[in-house]
Amino acid sequence: MTVAAAVFAIIAGLVALLGLTGKITVPRPWMRTMLAGLPVVAIAGATFGPNGWTLTTVIAMTVAVLAGMLASLIGPAELASPAGHWVAQAWRLTSVLLVGIVLGSAVIRWGSSIVAPMPLISPRDLALVLVVAAVAAAARGGSLRGLVSTGTVILLVLFVLVLLAGFGAGTPGTVAAPLMSVTQPTSTWLFLLVVFVLAASNPALRQIRAEGQSIVPGTIILAVVMLLGLAALLSFSGGYVTLPSFGFGTVAGYIGFASPALSALVGGLVVIVVLAAAVLAYRGVFTTHYSFRGGTAPVDHWWRSRWFVAVVIGVIALVTALYPIPQEPILWLAALFAVSGWVVAWWAGRQPDDADAEGIDPVAVGQGRSESPGH
Image 1: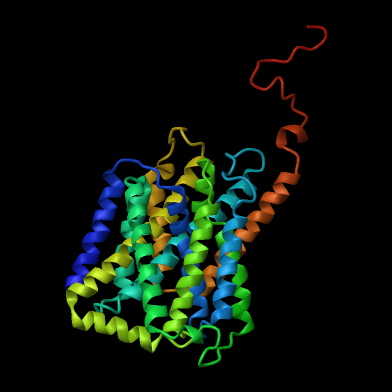
Image 2: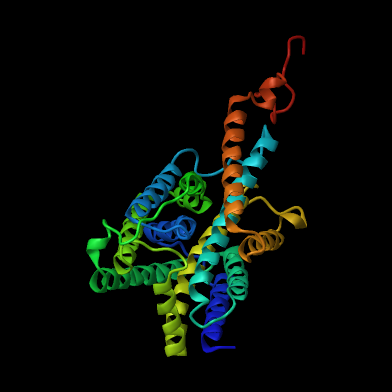
């Protein structure tokens, strides 16, 4: 095992341990919002990367992420407990949970693809370790404030370094006039709708609202970081970036071969950010499921217990994170499922409750037998 791989494993183990045994804490809303939105940023970047980023695509990606996150303000922050049209509510719940799991797995895929080339380790093995650690930490949600605060500070420090490298060592004039033209197929532009839907359906963002906090400041900060950070990368590479990038690959290779300690440091910092974002995504799945089934209601069946739910979430997360299926079909499926959940919820809201449909006296329910003339 390389030094970097050992460091990554230790970080993942500490995050899981603190999440399982640490004190329950609430992160700062703007920090929490930034990291909760990071998976959607990663999805947008990874989708446009193979054909290339330019200033036009960077602006389009940023607008899609920003609009989607702000759209999550629409509608109730929490799903109602099962009553009335329970099938429709269960469908809506399933769509939200799927989106949360896919977002957590997407950010782990993204992080593994960035970190693994430095120490030349398997991205699949790294993703496996990160998924297990993130799901375990999210199951109880301990020490969440510390993890999110640390991840946000690291993200902002890396952002500043990217700005300095991009605009200092690069050529800012090429940002608006790239050295090579880049074209995107229509299907890629349509994928911005997927980015929008996933951002709007993110259960981690709605959980922030459910706790009475605002997601607007963190959303704006994330959009600024995304726009300026990607612009700095364009400046560094001549106004366009096509993934995999020869320039970035050279930097990653240099870090890995030049110093094992340096690759462990840089990769470890990225791993912390990725774990913080993934834990928030999976935590949103747990809290959504918990509030839907009644919050403080006792667990009456083993399949409703926290740990059985954790196993189910973990299995789905592993399937969507470990590359057996291409990511783009998974994201399209999650987005379509989310839209179907919206439609079903809208339809159920237009239907009369079961009690009204059957003519049940709402006053008499739960208050004994109704009085009638002649008694």
